[in-house]
Length: 233
Image (cartoon, rainbow, N blue to C red; front, top):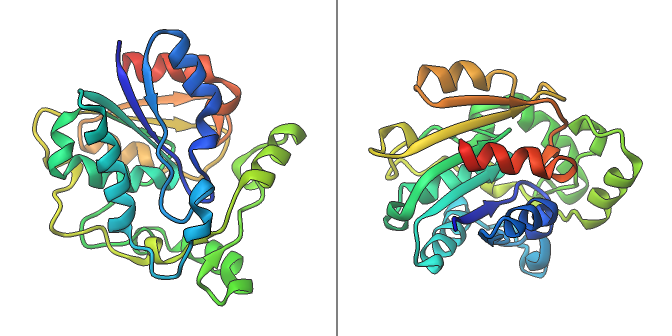
């Protein structure tokens, strides 16, 4: 049995992992799906001063809660707090880090610093909320053309605090490639160009790189494929 901790991205919650979690559990694995502060089932605690440190703490606490070695999986924005958590004391329990179609943080720089194109998109989505919270991006931006999946994502998504995307990744935490004895795999979903540039960075760092033909939420529609990727990654 393997223990997995799955970290959702912007506008999401633990709910987004249902199909993949069920697939892993059918194979006898243990799965934790923490919800980041202010999102999903914790949306009632949304506030403008939520920090990236808050989100890193949620992930680190979930890893520590398992009391076991884990495979830590982050998706989209969720890769950022996942990378932060592996650099904390709790990260010693992480035997493998899997980044699914997401950001690769740079210590001392924010998501918006590294991706000004994303900053521009989210600024427009946050305009109705005074720049504090971003409305969910339309499913079409993720390459999703299935109406049922699109409706499911739209109905369940909640506002995203812009503060965590503006905060630099803590310089006090080492970058993932500086951590010894940690296997890292990046899986890019080819249905969009959101993270097209990731391959060059991943290969330069000597991490494993995989691709899956699917939209940004491929683990929702292809849970068996993704389960196999993160099981043998």
